[in-house]
Amino acid sequence: MSRPKADTLLTLVQSFFQNYLRGMRGASSHTIRAYRDALRLFLLFASERKKRPIVDLTLDDVRADAVLAFLDHAESQRGNSAATRNCRLAALRSFAQHLLRYDVTRADQYGRILAIPSKKAFLRAIPYLEPEEARAVIAAVDPRSPHAGRDQALLLFLYNTGARVSEALSVKAQELRLDRPRQVRLMGKGNKERLCPMWPETATALRPLTRSCSAGELVFRNARGSALSRDGVAYLLQKYVKRASEALPALRNRRVTPHVMRHSCAVALLQAGIDVSVIRDYLGHASVATTSRYTTANLKMKRDVLEAFWKRAGLTQESPRQWRPSPKLLAFLESL
Image 1: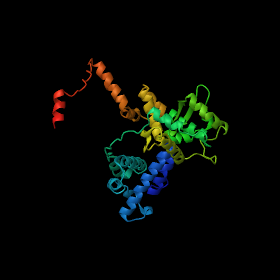
Image 2 (image 1 turned 180 degrees about the vertical axis):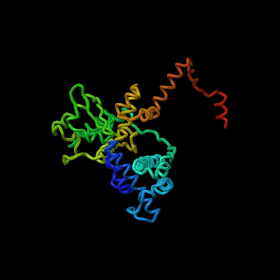
Image 3 (image 1 turned 90 degrees about the vertical axis):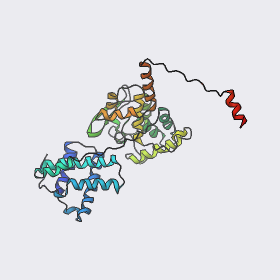
């Protein structure tokens, strides 16, 4: 990695994104956007706090007290959750590590930023669809609509593979194998490749799409033939959820995003008894700790575990006696 010409804030910001995140870490475009937004918001905050234009900010302005003030502002004024605060802090920590590599003279200043602890965040329950709900959403595609084939193939693909929406939208025809062994090559975070098996039903739905594009073209495209957008996928999914809710009232007022389909795939795999470490590789998680969150998501699985523990402990569960009102109680109530 080439050293920046001058250790100024601007040059180090540029080298952070161009040389470090893209070159060394191979960060995904999603990560780069998240870090960009965090750093942009921090610089805007520091500029207002110092009453100086951003162009006049220096490395001396990147201090722990400024970062702490920014994080407090993000929560109190911008309404960010503790989880979002921690994401902003992670980006600023990464930037401080980059600064430390080039500017050892301010090592203590950057070290104080690295020492800022994350805030304990409340983990919300993971939203997901039960298998019958996911199937109902997929079945809600009207076969008479112009893009029915694409929409059904897309929904099946998301549920079958548990792919992130960015992974699904970047799939090219040459990365699909629709004959046995049916599989797809997905490019995940950090440019990590993984192979995902596909159901015969998914392969059958994808086959007409691959016939209309060359090997190097994207499989999922919009009406104009260009890449389908994330917002487009979210719109389509919500449309079919609304249609499926006519038969399944439980889906009403549910916000089902493409990532919910990924969660649904993970929970269905767990319900099928698949080991967590296998699901980690299936979904492309960097750590099994991320995958383990799904074990807390499903109430039925918790009941099954409790039932297994009850039997393993050698305890017999007595069936509750059915309650019947006594004649005296009925006589008393009638006398009132």
